[in-house]
Length: 385
Image (tube, rainbow, N blue to C red; front, side, top):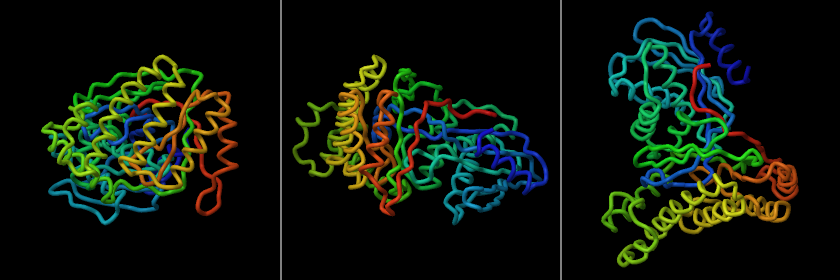
């Protein structure tokens, strides 16, 4: 039994003096490539990780949903009969938001008691928020005796985060947490929501390194980037930046301010890199994949301006180690919304220990402590345990 599952069940029994009726898990995710392309109707290539949010749920009385967060040592209670309003607790707004937007989507909800525990590192850019949304949403549906398509669950999660929590995220995080396949990445067309499972070769490891710099999607920088992309799309007369290629970007840039142009250049080139990376991964071409990942990091640093000095240094250390130990077979880049969080590397199994040793020798967090690392395999999406 996973630690998160054990903690969720134990907390439920302690708080409510009975066993839960259902246990649901949903994974965090790491994005291999395709950053800030999702809300531009573009392409992303994430996979789910083997770190989860677990929800234990059972019946309640009246019209009440009562939720415990074990990780925050906090409690929330609200009525589902009438308008659901914001809580001063950020974690609780993900629960309330999912309940409200499921109701808006014409799903009926049963009064419920919930306990929540997770082992997705908070603030790391591994989408603990989407894991929470998918686990809570699936649990509420199950407790109510209803069915929901996974794509619909993901869309309701995105809607809740956009409109209730206040982060203008795209669909990627929720969709991969809902629909992931074990041992596969998922190439997602964020306009059509078409998903193509891309096998991750057995010889490749995913190394995720937490920089120690706390990442938050709920601040203004993420929403600012989205507004800049929308401004650029309006300039080019298209619905989204997905609709232009690099030639069109250059041909039509006259009159567009430099910042919006560079934001657009990142998105346009990142879309092309993501499609190429899916091909490289399918063909087990680690050298090509590594080149694309390094180009992606440079674009996030220089054009989209969402990296920080510690992240850049960590990515450089990892790419140098891959060049030295793996002959360039693999690559590293920042993953997630930016301004902190994690760096991901894909590299051959046999050299992961060398890369980790190099990180320990050359990188320390701001508190001079060693960084947290995770060697992960791609896991499945939300499911009932």
